[in-house]
Image (cartoon, rainbow, N blue to C red):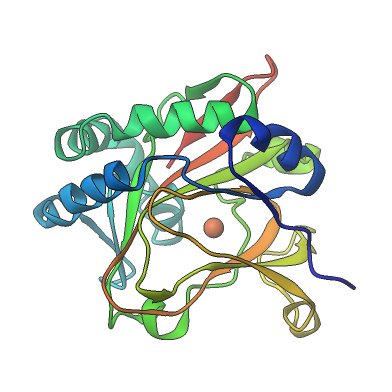
Length: 242
Ligand SMILES: [Fe+2]
């Protein structure tokens, strides 16, 4: 088995073809670094608005579906989705729409908000917390897909826009392992070759949601990244959520 192909592009408009070829695309300067860092500063200043997950192991501005699902809080997620979007807009004005338009250019297709779900949000991982020390859970990004979408392997992706990278490490490791109905990888799969997405402020990654991946341990300041999960719908457009 060889490492999964990771394509690096310098222009957003080159991303759709690269994504179609490899399913793992690193996009340099998808957002101007100063703009990304300014968004990160606003997010870090909005700590009173962050939502904790997993007993404070990680935080977000906006509510993330997968954390609420895994904690049995999906009722809260849907009940508070409109409030979540309002808070993201209030604390990081314009960021949600910038992420949606980046996703549309990266996919080469229209992107709409998924009805009832929260729009794009921001994950904050703090130094000293478990993800910084051990790395995140090895996973697929399939939590938000319906059983029908999973069964049909509906095209699905995750866009990560790095607002403030970790000072050291903190990339995304991607294995050449596809989702086969199990949420967890085998030991053998974890030993298989992998590729590493690295980030500077303003860089983005577009990743096939069915690829096994993991946030790497990091050191230095907080790691702050905006995220949109995406799935293609019948019209050929994509729907996004957080
Ligand atoms: Fe993920």
